[in-house]
Amino acid sequence: MDGSILAMDLGLVATVGGAAALDRRGAFQLMVSQPLVVVPALGVVLGDPQTGLWLGSLLQLLWMSSVLHGANVPPNETVASVAIGAMVLLFGKYVGAPDATVWTLAILIGAPLSLVGRWLEVRLDRANQVLADRADEAARAGEPAALDRLPWLGLGRAFVLNALLVVVAAALGLGLLAVVYDDVRGAFAVALQTVGRYLMPALGLAVALSIVRRRRGIALAAVSFAVVMTAILQGRG
Image (cartoon, rainbow, N blue to C red; front, top):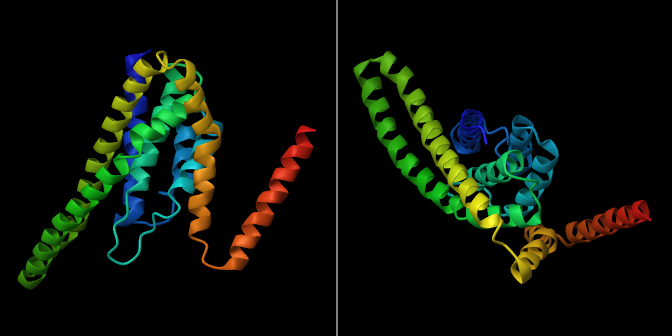
């Protein structure tokens, strides 16, 4: 494992994580912070778009109910997804092929980061309120230069803190995966494979269906699922 190349890759992870965190609430809000977009993008950056697309799709389903509205601050699926994606993609690049055991362990390790990310967002909101008060004071004092700096200060702080959170979690998670993976044997390995291949996708579909409010939407989802499954089975045949 080349330490300098790994450091560069971790720098890319930090950049993607910080930018995606800004898109989630602080600026832009172009939906690139959604797992379905940001994890495949990370896969392209780290050289494995196929794994990124699969993992991003799974994480998007698992966090479909994490919706921003009003003053609600849900678990931060963005930083958790970037960290999980980085663990799996870096494992594949530096350790070995990422299988169901790897992505299951990565999700179990990285999912609690969504709660840490929410805690950080709340703290950043409070810090931004202080900046808003300073902006009011600068406006009353007729200091436009201060008004220009304050938004960038808030955005820069959010970028740096979220980037640090993501890259530290990704680095620690990668190290833990590399240590634990070789010790996974027997029934435990079979259980992790089963959870990763079947249970987690099923759970993701259940979460996605739980937010469908109309019976027509549920029926459409069921029909779509049946059509896709039929096409897959025919293709295998």
